[in-house]
Length: 497
Ligand code: NAI
Image (cartoon, rainbow, N blue to C red; front, side):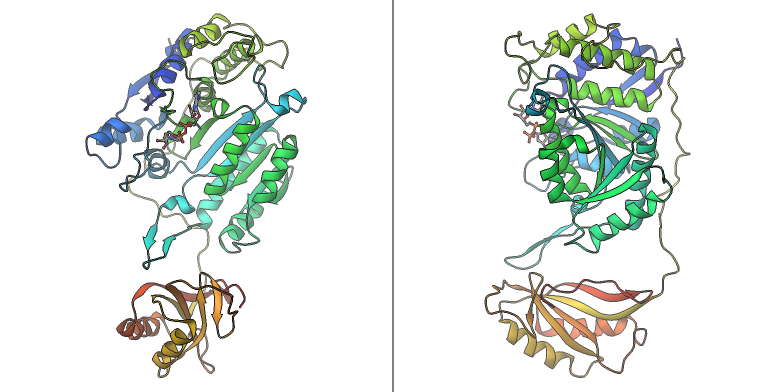
């Protein structure tokens, strides 16, 4: 027996324990347990139930940090009450910045595409830390709530570099970046720009991009044209569920959350509360996630043997109730896995078998950088010359645009700033605008330097003084400085400006 590699095991909630036990049974039968030692960690509903708002114990966190690998079942997110999703917390806390989801046509899993002879084999790489998943939300007025969309250059660089390296490893010819940079010119614009910058180191692979709404349509019409798409977090989440639908549903969608130090492997689906405890859940997505983990740690032979047995079972019509040929018997979770165990050593005949390495590995290979002693600050750009040129102040007021503008002009009279814009829900309503634009109780008033002043003449203190003056008369709900970076505006224009 080789040295065993330790992996943290969280069986999860709902169907989690059923599908995890079944998956581990398959791994045991394939000899995987000779190489791996699973340590249970306490996470999920039972931990939330004890009043722990993180959903995981301190011991669980320490184990995950010590071992660097987690195999997890789905976990329930408490509804309402401000409780955060433990699944998102895990990815963010341990900096698992790339979420890799693979979608493949499988034998015996009938879809409109498989019936039409369309073969799908696609990987979605989703940025996993930033975007609206920062979960930074505020109520700004009676009627307005904000969710901040945070996209950083180093965050983009990490996921793009990973995606390009994966594409090279998989021998892909073309990679797409999905985005909405036509509307969100700064956030998605940077995601796309950093994608193109990273592409320069991979000249043998074509770098293409596609707007996310067009991507969704193309995926439904001609999914086989995509091999890999890289997307920001929220768009990647939505698109990957669409892709799961293309290959037969969530029961066949595995995922890996990859970080520099810690990686987590889990199915895309949730806890399926409607079928939990019935012993009928489909464990395929978790098995496939487990295979991603085995490959991640270099157990290629065992991954290939298990995958071939799974494919051989599927093509024989082995199925759980959520898919497959209705003329074949429906198996429960345990019987389904037993049927795969019985076929270990077999290969599929109707689809290409996965190549089994000539020489089996002597054991897992897994290494990671030394443990950081504190949080690292990652940076892409430095030495940028930045100047303050004004500020946007956000007001909670039911006044009309004209009244807001009149008040603001009075307030800024004796300051270096002039009122240049009033907008409501991102649309300009002063100095020009349409009577048809409906307004809510939340305004942006933009102040910019008066003629005769140049960027760099004043620091942020003058803007803060202006904020004070506005706050004496109005409810201020938030505030942003306007800055130029190496002479380029670091803020967007209003719609209609
Ligand atoms: P879900 O994925 O649990 O279920 C959606 C539908 O798919 C249900 O009808 C369910 O029965 C079916 N389904 C899912 N997995 C299946 C499987 N392996 N075999 C057969 N049928 C399956 O999504 P839902 O209902 O929106 O979420 C339930 C809970 O799971 C929530 O608390 C949610 O927060 C959590 N969740 C956790 C995730 C994770 O741990 N990574 C991911 C998604 C949701």
